[in-house]
Length: 269
Ligand SMILES: NC(=O)C1=CN([C@@H]2O[C@H](COP(=O)(O)OP(=O)(O)OC[C@H]3O[C@@H](n4cnc5c(N)ncnc54)[C@H](O)[C@@H]3O)[C@@H](O)[C@H]2O)C=CC1
Ligand SMILES: O=C(O)[C@@H]1CCC=N1
Image 1 (tube, protein in one colour):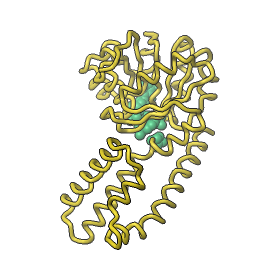
Image 2 (image 1 turned 120 degrees about the horizontal axis):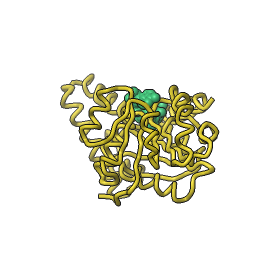
Image 3 (image 1 turned 90 degrees about the horizontal axis):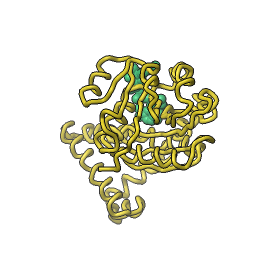
Image 4 (image 1 turned 180 degrees about the vertical axis):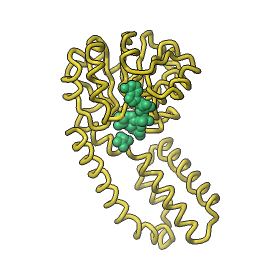
């Protein structure tokens, strides 16, 4: 259990990410449920968090009237503009943490005069408190604000503090990666099925392999290339397979990260 914070955290947008952040802070013992406020337009999302003892609100204005010390903006980038406009008069003294992909600190700071702003780029496994989050501080955020943001997101997994241009890269790498890894799991499973494995068995084998590899890479600190060598017998099957896979996979991965970054810049306007 982490250090319990004596402040209120308001989460605006209790969807996939905002809901996970609210739940994770309570599950990690960083915040009391009564100190977590959540706003969402959808009644079922509110009800799920209210059941855990959190205070819930139908929209950002009602939540922000409570003046929480920390506000997490977790709505889609497409609706963030409206939320910022209605939040601006109410967050001048708050630390505002935005997780919206592609919305730059400069836009957040000019929409929220006075507020101290931090950008966070978490990823989906924050839902199981095993995520990865990049943080970048705005010009008005203090060192204490950054440490507070680090404490909050550390309840949900790994945290790295960086410059904003690097955070956009982190979004393309760790933010999107759960989808990349899932695509690979699905492709490998289908390749097994094509060559005769029952689908359920193929999927179980692939998923268990991913978990085992992740554990070894993390626990042993082994470099991925060295790990590959351990698997690759001279003149064996893995060497034959890697010769086919490496070129398209590496080229595709570089192109995918560049495409995500290009889209981030489009969203930033
Ligand atoms: N899904 C992911 O893997 C990641 C998402 N993000 C960012 O997180 C943000 C949220 O994404 P998701 O959680 O996937 O979306 P989501 O659609 O699951 O959740 C957004 C929630 O906001 C609510 N909402 C919309 N307007 C509202 C308002 N004015 N007041 C209160 N609630 C309102 C919606 O009802 C919905 O429940 C986005 O900005 C996205 O860029 C960042 C990193 C990873
Ligand atoms: O696809 C997106 O825009 C969000 C940001 C990173 C992961 N999901």
